[in-house]
Amino acid sequence: MTTGPADDQYWMRRALAQAEQGAAAGEVPVGAVLVRIGEGTEPQLLAEAHNAPLTTHDPTGHAEVRVLRAAGELCANYRLPDTTLYVTIEPCAMCVGALVHARVARVVFGAREPKAGALVSREQLSDKTWLNHQPDVTEGVLADEASALISLFFRSRRAAQKAARARKPLES
Image 1 (cartoon, rainbow, N blue to C red):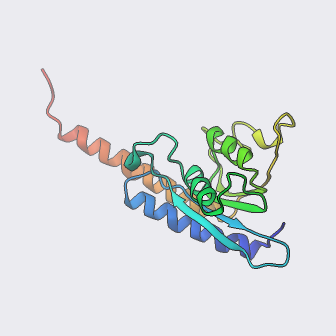
Image 2: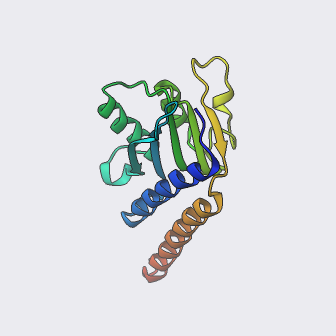
């Protein structure tokens, strides 16, 4: 199950569009797209989502988990072999665990997550032979765009917090 760089960029752009929707909703801008890629068939979009733990009041409301849930419902199966997950930012440990459990064949991500990335940055969970499944990992697809989107979000959030502190009267 392979796709070329142009295919990876196409699907990553869809994930970036999801991330932008998440940012517009006040969520950390991470977007994900899950695609079934079978031998000799056109790729099939199964699900797409953005982060939503704040709006859904769900700590597991990461984009990756949300697409796995939607695809599991669509396919009536929690196992999702022959799929590729495209996600704008490197998944955390919780999301990697879900991807392994779902048997996702390939994970393609944009930018690394130096604080919590669990595929290459902080941990390499996909390399652990004690797990029952190891997805193939491709990193760096449209990394500059993904990194810029999340950097702008946090820069804006910090500026808003600083402005709010400046407006707050000093307490005696």
